[in-house]
Length: 331
Image (cartoon, rainbow, N blue to C red; front, side, top):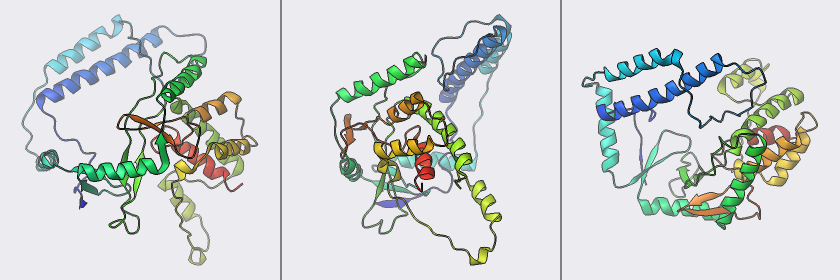
């Protein structure tokens, strides 16, 4: 495989064509005006009772027409109609355009590195071999009826929370890999991180529940858990006698997939001693881990389990689950 990298962040956005920009402008303006209508509707029609908890899921209903916002909407439409464009001659944008053209003309795949800005060019058969090796190492083929099982359980939870009109069914998106080029002997024996983008939306509810549990648990147990660089620096500045201290660095191999249902249940049992966790919250947390991995349209499940339990890299609540297990494990 050939390593390559770009001299800028790949999050940079190239200047779109006039046609593409116009399409995006219209789509985003419609989305914005939709939110404005709903905001105005709720402002003009205040609800005296407590609002329903939606866990961030947006309604799929169309907002009603609001006469008070009509002049604003018409003004926005006129603004879009009067947009003019000029040719962009920026050196950086030309570089972006050239790189995009070279990527499109390349007959190999660009595979992202896991923890660096590098990309690796792989032929399709090489990538498929690595992907298949990583899938079959941990997963086995599953019956397609499990897809309905996951959707039925998610529907039951969303119906009980009165948000079944907002929650989507399981998205069957194929898994992919990133390359761990920071590992030893990577050139001779490349290792990968398997990403599963297919996830039940119950995970979005579980994420919020786990965030609150983790917040209260850290306060109750006074465990030292960092979530960002600034918190680490703040802790480090307060350390005394730094010259006589030593850092110990270790790496938890495959932390996400190593979390079993039994381990998570023991973790929740421990956390329940310090934080109130209702039976409903616990059901949602466990149910959100019911997952399938898809490769070439075929569903796969964990090889060493008879259940669909799986804490996947890429799930909505995977990080929060790891934080909970990490903070409770020493106990």
